[in-house]
Amino acid sequence: MFGGSEETVRIRFHNRFVGVVIDRFGKNVPLRPDGDEHFTARVEVAVSEQFFGWITGLGRDVQILSP
Image: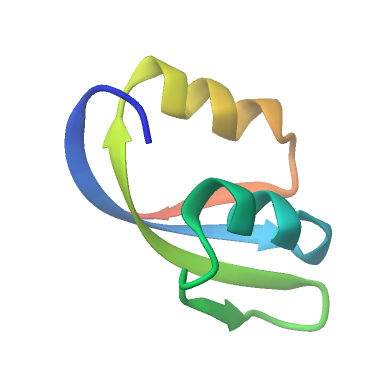
């Protein structure tokens, strides 16, 4: 995704971001429902300032759950 060390992260998104997640990580990204209005994705990312900027730019309806 961006330059930095590779890490598997689990991220919680509001359902309205499903298209954003597929655009960023591809059609084969595993998505799991998390309640009625959210889903989680487990993805490989390069941990970097750009990654955190992308996450924070999506707003309050996105949370990094792990690691």
